[in-house]
Amino acid sequence: MTLRVSVVVGTALLLGCASAPARSGAPTDAGPAALPAGGAGGAGGASAATAAVAPPPLRWPVRTVPHVDLWLHAFAMLSDDTASVPLYRRGYRDSITVLKNQRNLLTALDGNREALRRGLQRGSYLDAQFLPFAYGSWDELRATAEQYLQLGGDVRRAPSRDVAFRLQPFAALFPGSSDREWLRLFLTGVDDEGARFLLAEHQRQLRERAPTITAVDSLWQQVYRDKFERFLNNTGQRQGDLVLSLPIGGEGRTGPGYTGRVMVAVTYPARPADAAEVLYVFAHEATGALVGPAVSDNTTPAQQRAGVAAQFISSGQVQAGAMLLTRIAPELLDGYQRYYLTQSGQRVTGDVRALFDRTFTVPAIIREALARQIDIVLSGI
Image (cartoon, rainbow, N blue to C red):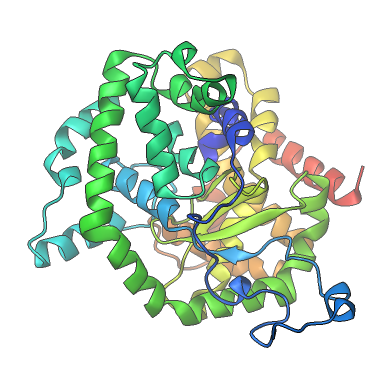
């Protein structure tokens, strides 16, 4: 997500510190990445020699995480998505609304939608999109949020320093009484939405898209992870989880995860033929941390106050992903440019590269700074 680079960093650090280890209630990996080393053939008498030569766990497994999708789904249903690259998959809210109308289904999230939307516009709650990354399940996330609410937002009343520390992300995002009331209403809506609609619908869609996760896993693990590896290692992203998320489009989400690794949520295409879209969004996200500093260093305080710098960050992140692919996987560049043009609502005709540069415009000085930084990272300096 573009705004993550400059706005969410403080919250992300808190989430990283509060991340919990996986536990019995944590979501399991889906698709080929879920299989343990050795597949299904492990009888109880496996020898120590066999165990000794077992391959190490995948550094970037392909996964699905239902409670992350539930949380992002709720924000997608409430947000006015007017960004040049939408925060969620294009048409996602409309498609879900049609589906629920067909089933004559109204949940607490729908019933409280206007109040939640007004609060979302009034408060600075969009950073809360990253909260579920730090928790292994919906039950764990909800319990932590409810504990914060029960304490009236006063983390000093927590029963231990450890608990107080885990509550800090909520205290940072929802400090006032009106903020906590919004969170209370939101939790009620998300819980009802999941129980009565989304979790079952999510499982249905995962079954339908099982061939896609197989295609993505093969493309990523067998071909492109190695091509990204140098960049990831040199930007402190050696370990991570590549999470396919149904609500996400071209604007992914990145943050510290409950596994102790970085978690990158990207789009989950409907068809195996579109598996490369995952790589496009991953490139966009992997370069995200480079963009904020490049824009900040090359814009004036007046431009930053006027919001011009924020526009440069959005376009700069799209451009940075293209620059990275030019260097490590040029065969993906045309598809990347077409995908992000489509995401921005453009009709893709004529000279794709020229249209891409016109749509995602950044000053030459920022482009040069990004290109230079990517070259430095890839050279290992």
